[in-house]
Length: 386
Figure 1 (tube, rainbow, N blue to C red):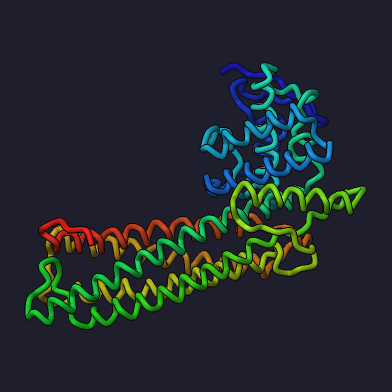
Figure 2 (tube, one colour):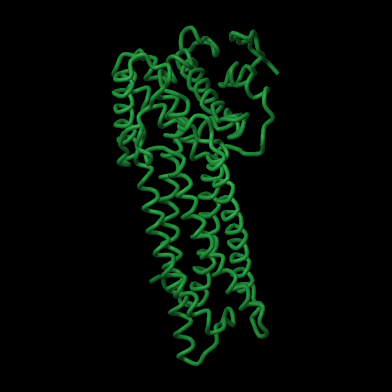
């Protein structure tokens, strides 16, 4: 494998010649054991979006030269499109913080920008990952802001999925009631009459859960003012943060706004714990629904058709995901109770499990809703879509 030599204050490090990450990422990644906590693609895209907004604000305030800043933003656009994902070798949990993620992205953006300039990767005298990409922002601010962006986007996707499942449950309830009134049997599954009531109750509960999720997501719009300890001009730092948030609002089309650092709802760990609590409630409600379905299927006389088995398997899949999300909420609560010396730092275990809960819950709901959709399509021999 071809390599290049990069140097930092601790000395030289061999880096794969093709890599966009560099010496700091290689050194830090080798210092700590890597836990199986891969970074979600949505978070990497959110991180690139925050970097792009910060660099654009830095150009405005003449912190970053225009040509260099534009190339960094072009590199960030590529990452937002899903490119270069293999360049992120840092997991969420390295040591006691997620700062390596920030370092990893800084180097990827700097080296990709150098490549776009037809310069050698690693030429940090020309484009410096810390000076030009990170600027005066603290790593904690960059990471917590990126988590706000990713969590807001994923939560709203989950709201849509939850509302879609609510609709499918109402349709299933009405279909079962119609079959009972017609004194016919379900062609797919011999579901007891009590499940008709269960579907209706679950649909009503999902409406409440969706509203709670939307409320939890709204709290992520508050972005705290960056307060890097080494900032020599606090007011200038505030202006840079507000300008960055303004660009972030334009890029994401989400009404983010800069809030006082003393506002407990503007980036504190509690907003993530609150979201996790809402996710736990959703998981508990869906757990009950899946348990009722599986219990009904175990009764004598239940059908065993392929369609019926698919429905039950999907309910079983969602059932297990609910168990995971409930467990993740306990982990997040423990992480928050344990605290961290810097109150503005979000523990990496919270980063990972908040986004993991959102991700797997969407997958479980989509799978289960799809089985309900198939059930209804199979019951409609004309293939009519209403």
